[in-house]
Image (cartoon, rainbow, N blue to C red; front, side, top):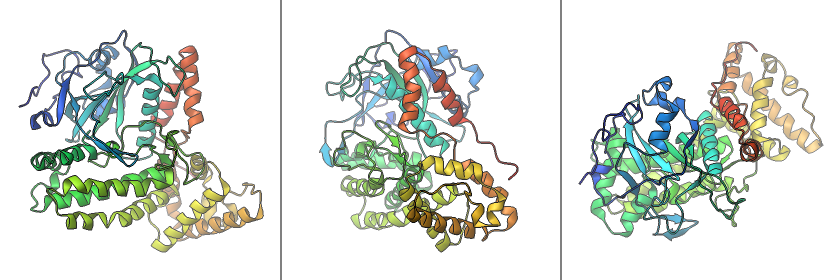
Length: 490
């Protein structure tokens, strides 16, 4: 039976507590979660608030104070119940039945201005039945990193969760992978759903066909409502999930992003990117780049991400086969590669400034771009930013004008560059001259100036840890979140 209610426990002057919280997951019953309490912290200092997300909730940022954030998302007053969700998962290929929300919970679910249902989920809010001996806390650096990751991915057009707030909590934490003690925090994550592949895997292990059907009906009703009236809605759901995941991993790959821990409990049933731990943006194009120091085999390296996501979708068939025919799911999964290729080709084309090109030319240009990035080892993000800032309508007149001042150190790379440059010039001349302004604008739209590689993160973390100086962090965030100005002349 549901434990909470549609509205906050008491009327409050706090706009965050007066949101119309819906018990969408709660009403499914306690087979899916445990009711938990939030930890009490020695202090609460608001370090980040995402005013862009507030507007998605229909709130005017000026009407929401920092004290409102602390009351709701640091002290955790005025709301209940908090639900620690149950799930299992394949972690580095091994099944783990001892998972679940171990340092977070579902705080509440609310409608955005777009009419869609969103989750507020915590990270670092204390122990739960699934903490497995852990302290249920989040390091401040981990919180800072997730804020930066999610905002950067959002800027790059990746379907991602975002951080609504980050509160420093004043507790010293001991972690083996960084200098200890370190500072602590609690974060609120804003996402479409916290239901994971592993949520269904747990129900499959328990052999609960009835609960799988209940949860799947809920997922379709809330997150795939256009399928709700279809007779074969379950098979259609799986096929669309395959397409969404293919699109997501294409977004990661074109953005140069390595998630690092693509266990099935880190895969969202809505095809959304979330839960950023040891992530990294690649410095240079290297398919073998591995972000997590503990990924000794390189299982989740940058280049493996499409294959791993496909494998995770395949493993999801095991619990779902209780309600969906295997043949139907195989038919859906068979389209993963073509979906991925379509999305990846378009994303790379966008980063090169083009909306559409003839298919063979598009593939050639993208392949030559990757070849040049790989052979030259120029900075991945910097290449696209330099392309953006140096682009000129004169590039259409002659291939020699394209990166005319670029110095190439050897003959082999010179041949590679000249081949790419001629192909880019050919692409420009496939379009009318008046399209050059649109290309310039598109480059600014898809290529931010920020290069969020690890040294950039360390550069803003150092003043925080040494002098409690947050100014570089806020300046970097402002640069990431700022809408890139459209170029008006070229």
